[in-house]
Structure formats: C-alpha cells, structure tokens
Image 1 (spheres, rainbow, N blue to C red):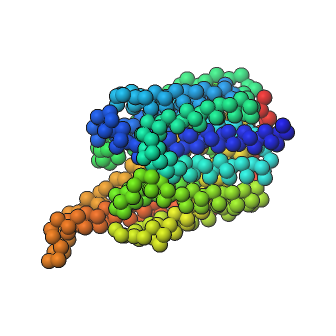
Image 2: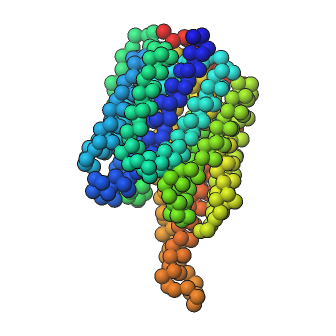
Image 3: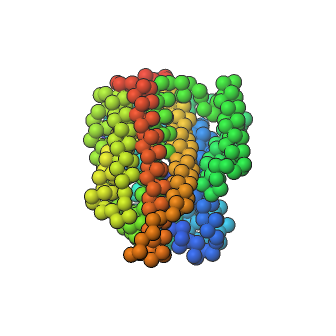
Length: 489
C-alpha cells in the first residue's frame, strides 16, 4: 500500500474516533428518560450523567494532549479507545445510577486521552497544504456534525433497541478504530526526552475542572448561586497561575508559543465562539421539535440530517478547495455570517411551524456556515506546530471547544429559562372563545418560544462577534510554522 493510500485510510480511522467522542456528548441525551425509568433515579440526578462526562473530559484534555506527545499517537489511541470501550460497556450494563454516572466519568477520562491523540495524529499525517485541507474538511465536518448525528443515533437506538445501546454502540466504533490504528496510524512519539509537568498538570486540570463545573452548576442552579461564581473564580485564578507556571516550566504542559501565534489565536477564538453559539441549534431546536411540534426522538434526529448534509457540502466543496489556496480568513468570517443568518431564521419559529418552510432553511444556512468554520479553524489551529507539540496543540483545540460548549449550554439555557419565566408572569388577554386551561397552555407555549428566540438572538450575536474578530485576526494564505513539522518516528 502506498504512503498516500495509508494516509487516507488513517483519516478514515481517525474520523471514526472523532465521531465516537463527538456524538457521545449528545447520544445519551435522548436515552436519559428511559434510563431514569429503568434505574429509578431522580430528575435532578439526570444532569449528572451529562456533567460527569463533561467534567472529566474537559479538565483532563491538556494532560491527554501532552501524554500523546510523550507516549506516541498510536499508544495514546490504543489506551483511549480501549478505556472508552470498557467504560461504555460498564455504562451499558449498569443496574444502578452510581455505576452509570461512574461509567460516564470514566468515558470522559479516556476521551480526554483519545481526542487530542486523534487530532495530533491527523495534523502530523498530512503535511501537504492541499491534502491537509481536504483531510481537515472531512474531519471538521464530522466534528461539527457529531452533536446532530448523536441525536439521530440516540433516537434510533432508543426507539428500536434500548437506551443501553447508546453506550454499547461505542464497542463497535472502538473495535473498528483499534484495528485501523494498528494498520494505518504511525506512532509519532516525541523525539525529545521530556517528563510530564506535574505542577502544570494539577493547576491546568483543576482550573479547567472548576470552570466547567461552574458553567454546569449554573444550568441546574443559577448565575446568582455562590457555588457557581465561586467555582468560576477559583477556576480562573488557577488558570492564571497555570499560565504563569508555564512560563517557568522546563517541560510545560502547554507551551505558550502555541497561543501567541496570530492565526492560531484567531482559529481558537472562532472555535470558542462557535461552540457557544452551536448549542442554540442542538439544544433549543431539539427542545422545540420535541416539546412544541411533538416530534418523536427518532423523527427529531432525522430532522437534523439536512444540517449534517449542509456541513458536509460546505466543508468538502468550499473548505477543501479554497483553504489551501486562500487560507482561513475568507472562509471563517463568511461561515460566521451564514451561521448568524441561520440563528436569525430560527428566531421566527411559531407554535405550528411547517418544518420545510420554517425549520429547514435555518438548518441549511447554519450548516453551510459551520462547514466553513470548523474545518479551516481546526486545520489552522494545528498547522505549523512542531511534531513534539502536536498533542498539546490538539488538546488546546479540544479544550477551547469544551469550555465554549459548557459556557454555551449554561449561558443560553439560563437566558432562555429566565426570559420564559418573565413572559409567563405576563397575563394573557382573556378570550371568551378559549377555556382558561387552553389559554394558559397557549401562553406557556408562546413564553417558551420567546425564550428560545432570545437565546437564538444571543447565539447570533456570538457569531457576529466571531465574524469581526476572525476577520481581524486570521490571515490569508498558508500559516507560518512554529518549527519544522517533523515526520513521525
């Protein structure tokens, strides 16, 4: 097999790995009510099945990225895939809430090893600008579509099988990926003798933990809660201390040279703001389709397919062809503006909207925008780094998305809930043709939609800010390298 064929097979394997990690953030969501009935845990505890994964995954990404530089990409992928599969098997066979939430936390731990290793392997496998653009277009499209695919897969498995298969399905993905890694992925171990920065690991992991926990706590409590702000403040203080320590460390967990590069900084800003805004789609639109229009979980997942198709079309055709020639600057701001337009379209949703006339246009426009953002931004954020820093750079990309996503869920959900509560306090005009019960129901639906609309406007605002910042920060053409992108050993 030629080296070119080997690279593209490696892309397929790494894309499966990325899909597994990406969809696991949402595939469990639709299964939660069924798991709750089976395992008899409270409504309040449901959130912990999402939070446990987010906390362990988000807080350990920087460590996982550096471990892939020290162990090698292949070893990290083996460890991550095996651990993720075993945790999924434990969760799928769980007969208590404690076992299930523990399995979700362990999934996050091994996901933190897996995600940076996969992206680092991809970034060091493709060096040619044209091949790299095509490869990252595919990888970025899968990453951007992961949440929507998770909703579809979760709905299908829950409806046709059982909620447990939302976890067991990872065994299939992991088995295929492990064989593929053995056949097609090179080791990529750092040539430099280095050790793990223990102090940096403690500061960085603890800082990310408290930041992610603070945002997650805001969802279940409030922004006025002392624990919410206490966690966020502690997290920020620890991250500031982490940055100061990285300036002095001999073997930094996150080399600061990765952050000061202008194009990389602009790409990270794009990923952060997009990760905030994208939850306007996966969260509130899913609520709208099921809660307001009465869609089943499976039908809701199918309804998101045009979003996946639009992302793929945009990423494959535009990003793959234009990124290597024009660089990220013309693409990412344009994607931001298209995503903004999609959010604005969603603000017009009504209680009895027609899917094809009112929902589908927003999905297509937003999908075209996301395809222009994710692939170029991820490719640019990892381009030109030294081979010995590829894992750390990849972890930085994943951490940026995770923190942005956590902030997006907390902020947009809080906005929607508070706006809905205020709208519900406003008495509706009395109508003699409607019973009071029907009138109150209609008022509640309108209040909920008003909350969604305001959240969509905020999401549009994040995309608008992203368009301005990325136009100013990103550059046209091929990004400069931090050093020679050495071949993998």
